[in-house]
Length: 479
Image (cartoon, rainbow, N blue to C red; front, side):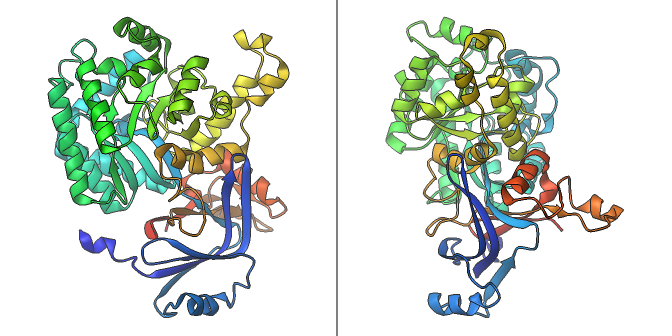
C-alpha cells in the first residue's frame, strides 16, 4: 500500500488561471500564473502574471529543481484551479441512503433509516463497499477534506480511516459515541461510558499508527449529540479533549423535538450549548452541526469559546429542520463551514451545499412568518452571495476544522489541495457530442469571470471536476 504514496513525489508546476477566496465575499482571480508545488505537496512559489510559455526554466533555476523530473499541468480554455472543497459534516455509513428521507423529521428518520443502516456496518465487507464508494464519490465532487462520522464499531471506523489514507483524501474520522440506554436503540449503542471511551481510544490509536503526525488523517471525538450520551461519557470525552487537544464534532439545535428532548434530559443546563460547555466539549476545533435554533446567548457563548458551525442547508431543507441564521453567526464572529450531511442531505456534493446555502439564505430574506416584522434591510442582510458561499466551502471549513494555515486557498506555505474545474465552451455550431460530455455549464465566451463562476455554482456538477489533488497527489481524474 505504501508505494501508492510515492508515485506523486515529484516537483510540480501548475500554470494558468487560479481562483480562490481571500476573505468572506471576495474571490481573487489570478490569470497567467504559475504555482510551484514541491515533493511534499507544499506550495513553494507563486509567480503571478508571467509568460507561461517560458516561465518553467526560470522557476526551476530559482528553486534548484531538475527540469526533467517535473510534472506540469496547464489549464485549457474555460478551466481554472480552485481550492478543494471541505465537507465539515458527513456521515459515511449513511451514504447508501442519500435521497431517502421519506416524509420524516429528524428523530423518526434516525430510527427508521439511519440506525439500522449504521448498525449493519459492523460487517467489514459491507463497510468496505459503502466507505469505498463514499470516498470515491466525494473525491469525484472535489471534496479534498471531509469530517466523517463513522459508526460505533472500532474495526470498521478504522477501515474508513485506512481507505481515506490509501485513496488520499484528507479526513477527520470519528468513531461515534452513544451510550445512553434511554435514547439509543438496544441494538445500536455503546454498553457503557467506559466502553465508549475505550473504543474511542482504540480508534485514535489506530489512526495514530497509520498517520503519526495526523498529516492526512486525524481522529475527531464524536459524541453523536448530547441526548445520545450519558453525563459520564460526556465528562470523560471532555477530559480527553482537554488532554489530547483533538477536535470534536457533534450536532446542535437541529430540530424542535430534539430541543425539547435536551431540555428534558439536562434540566440543570440553561441551554443546549451549555450542555457541551459544561462537559468541556465546546472550544476551538469543536464543529457543531446545524446550529439552526440557537438563542443569542448560545451564539455568543459559541463565539467566545471559538467553536465553529457546519452549516448543512440541503439536510435542513430535506428534513424540514429549519434555516440556519448564517449571517447572524458570521456577524457574531462564529466560524462557519459547509456540510453535505449525507444522508440527511440528499447529495455528497459540496457544490450542491454551496448552491443550497445561497438559496436558503434567500429564503431567510423573504418576509414570511415571524420574519415579516423584521425591517427589510436586516432581512436583506441574511442573503449570502456566490463569493460568500464559496468562501464557506473552502476557507470557512478550514477555519472550523483548525487547518486554515494549511488548506483552503493558494498561498506559499499552504498544501496543494485543489481541483481543476473545466466549464464547457460552446463552439460556433454545437454538436451533440459537445453537449453530452462537457456537463451542464455552457460558456459562450463573452461571460466575465465572476459570471462563469456563478454559472458553475448553480449548474456545475462532478462532470466539471477534471482533476483533484490532495497534498500534491492526484487523487481523482475524469478521463
